[in-house]
Length: 355
Image (tube, rainbow, N blue to C red; front, top):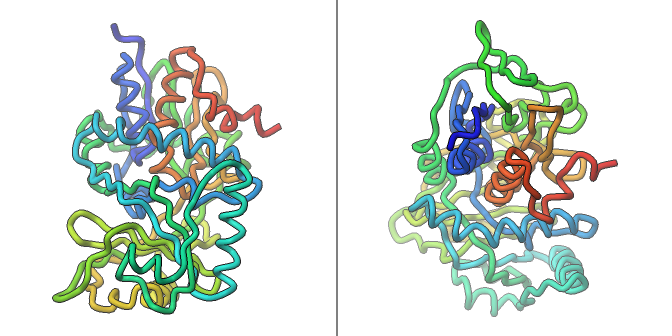
């Protein structure tokens, strides 16, 4: 039975996941986006790693991420081949100051009942032979996953009905376009960093944060990465996420630069230099792409998933965790649409939880 019609504004991983789950729940769904699958989701690393993103004071975000991580294997199995990888993550510290930061993280996780394995440099290299002998120490997080973000988007896109159009505003029962209006029973604002421009309540809640990634493919004789590597290099974060094709996504730059999506030379230089210090063999890889995206961030790094007003929902502000939080976000939005209880871990993402 069709429950009604919803319009999802935004065709990134959040919007598409919401649309897919809503259709499965009986809602007739239309996704509106001028350029589907072209935003931050397209240039993401693909890490599904709430534990290694954890930090003191962000326990609700960790609980939300862990709940979504548990849902990921079934979520992926229902979709098909999305390049889900299960080898886990190693987190490497390049110098003594970096090692101290990882000790703080490990002790914090232990204090809230989460276990990670603290390893010496040689122990890390036995797990991941590509690591430099200069790596001091690190952590192993075997429960982390990773996904091929572009495979995921392609699969989700095949399940959605699209209208390629620019959205000017949303309101109860309608989405306003350049020269027309789409009527509906409910609107879901999932336009990432651009969500803040579509409803007045979002302007102070969502902000754009720029990030850059590089995509590399192995050259002749290059040793492939066996698992996701995250590292601190003189306090700068860097990550390398392997794909089933042998390619590697390299990233971790972050700027408060508005909606700028130009790739800075400095960003490319820093990523390559830091990556080579952690994984010397990366110099044998071939640079095939550089790109920048704009993440939607909130003041507390938690997403905003709630009713803005009757008939208008928001699912935005996921910061670095859009891919990770896609399953629980979609389930939460569908529960709100259906008037059902939302997952307990998602209560922190409600507007009322922010005071």
